[in-house]
Amino acid sequence: MRFTLLRRLALYAVLAVGSQQCLGADVYGLKPGTPDIKSAGPLTFTPDGILFVGDTKAAVIFAIDPEDRSGNPKAVKLDIANFEKKLAGKLGLAPDQIQINDLAVNPVSGNTFLSLTLGSGADAKPGLVRVDNQEDINSVSLDKISFSKVQLPNVPDEPSGDQGRQRRPTRQD
Image (cartoon, rainbow, N blue to C red; front, side, top):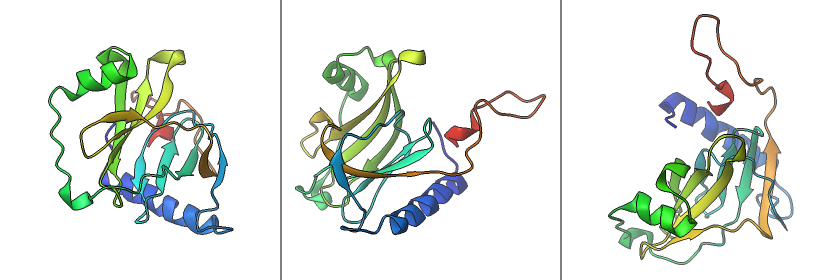
């Protein structure tokens, strides 16, 4: 999925406002649990390593602590040959059953995180993976992880579009 610069900036603005509203026991109001992510879309990190995940199906932004604090961001140089094949092998799926939606690099560790759609159609599931400094690919478990979430207001219904144009899910924007 491709995002224009304007759309990305709008998402980052929403993330910044949402994080300010989450002030509580800790800066982001994270509590242990299992986030109910329906789709893993746009990703970004805070300077201190908290991962924001945009859930376009549920119109929610999740703040997740991936507990990824070791590594040297300045020493990272990833060049993984046949990445799609290695990713598919690690996840036990065919390469055509994996869609990479976005990626973000943790500024604390230098590790790369990818948001994924696993499978297709109604059976598609969200996924998150981490590629560490040694080019190891690992799924990010969302069981018993510290997180918070913010529901976005005034979300467009699906599908939407103008008459005479190809209908496109605007919620993904």
